[in-house]
Length: 487
Image 1 (cartoon, rainbow, N blue to C red):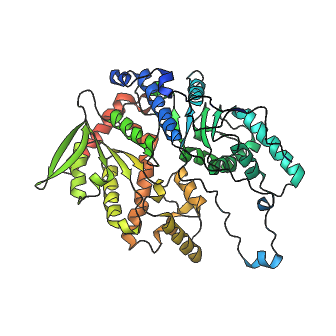
Image 2 (image 1 turned 180 degrees about the vertical axis):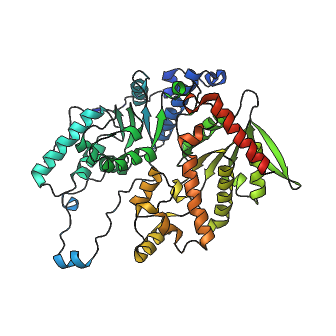
Image 3 (image 1 turned 90 degrees about the vertical axis):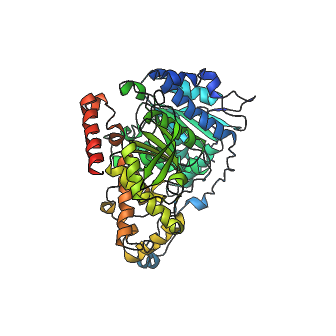
């Protein structure tokens, strides 16, 4: 049998209730008021770590169900059955819906990544009864040893990764990697399935790296096979940039992207952090505001500078329309929308209004920050509706062609590929009432994808590597012309 112990894995059980990580870092929210780039950047990272710490305090990981060897071997099929029946897609590994989103912290040498992770590790809440902290290279060496032993004993024709992942999941519900990297083709071929299998057992991942996920295994052999792992990291972990406060002219930009799901504790701090960054808390503290459109008032619950913050129901849940959104675009450059639900066919009115709002933001070249209950590609379709669309697409032969993902970025495209979906299939689904609605749906996904890019977010901020002050003034001229055209 394969050994289920490893000398290289550091596994600890806390003896007493650890103090929150903010206590160890000695940071306070008063630092943010000074707006010092270094302090505010560290404070932002600290808040992300604290959010995860608080979520773990309420987390009860599922019991690890170890697969049997027989279930990991492919089922034998007769020649005639394999000839006349198309092979069904491999069943996706199911990740628990209550799994807290882990962290991926990247930055240059000396940025404090390892120190922060070690502090987080040492202060995990008491209910986390087992945890593992290991250097990533040592971890992968151990994994390959286990895989080799499995294949020597049971042959090569089995899913050894799933078995090894269950072994490792039994050792700790929180797994901390130091120096995540991929330089070996053997690692690249198994990493996605390994990490996904660990998550399916309820393991929360926290890792440090010198590179952004998109820079991993660059120019590596068969890198296309590694792209699913990159997308898994970007969608299942919060990617935090420890260098952001120095890379971008010392502007204390939030360290993560503009879209966040699910609606957990981290979603609250995600929205507040972006509101503070895009607003002007010094000169214009957050306040309520109102604007008049055709004799009626549009209420803005929170406004600061050129940023406005709403919950989804405050903006979309009431009777609003294109005229209201255009007036908001004239008054604000950035919008933070929280608590966005998934919208099924029962909420088509919400979906239509939200798509109209997205179009207004896009056309005005404003910025948008969202916290959502579901991934972006599920905003307008429930998992059940996606299943119906899949069945319909299979019957019509619409699955699957990568070129049909019109304007959707790599992460969203990979998620759709994993489900066997494509934009053509969804637009032709019976779930949409007409050509105009199908087109609006695909356009909204495409525009959300573009507005989530780094280029869109940084446009108009005067970043040095984007042209500095000249670029900022150019963006302001574009916004000014749009306001004139929309009068």
